[in-house]
Image (cartoon, rainbow, N blue to C red; front, side, top):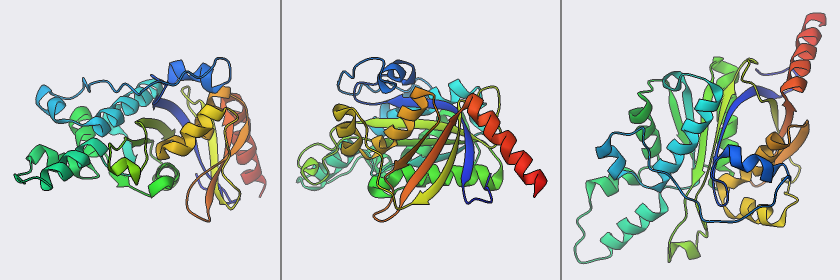
Length: 286
């Protein structure tokens, strides 16, 4: 919904998370809430069981990552995966696949594998998602460099507000090998997914109200998690994910564009219900 105050609002029903030291959202909650320490480890991306064997063999890390967090978020929400509109956001493509293509083009034998080519396009994960889920709902794919998560979240919120339909946001990044890592030093893979809905439901985790701001991005108290947030573009989502893990009302600012950031006011389930009641009451008295 678009509020008179200028906020764009939605309700979060599901979360998927996979990254360095985070196997999934369930295991990450205690760490992000400060109840346990952070143990850094390389990201382990599972094979996409939802794909037929032939497509599964062709997938790269970015596709596997997007499918893993997307399925986790949808399962948590209780929604029918085939009916959800989707927004895919990534600051780049599959780094390993891009590296392999560059190696081929720099060699004497420059014949490029069709599989390498179709995995190189930015919307490859969206295509594999539709194969895996048989989803026919609209799907958007976007990139905004280091602000890609915020751009994807804004797009998802706008779809919820304007079209009134639940929307799945999947944001992800993968690492680049040398020598590209020297100019794009993304050290590891990180993915996050959110199911956004226009109304509160029994699966609602929190309400989020978004607006643009010129305030600086919110840093994380943990030095290790802050380093992770700054190192991987999709991990710019961590202030929001940490707030959801803590389960208390809070306000955070996410990196977006050079002079514009994204402010998010997060209200957990009980507070979200009260916020919605006040909005309805306020609209009725105007």
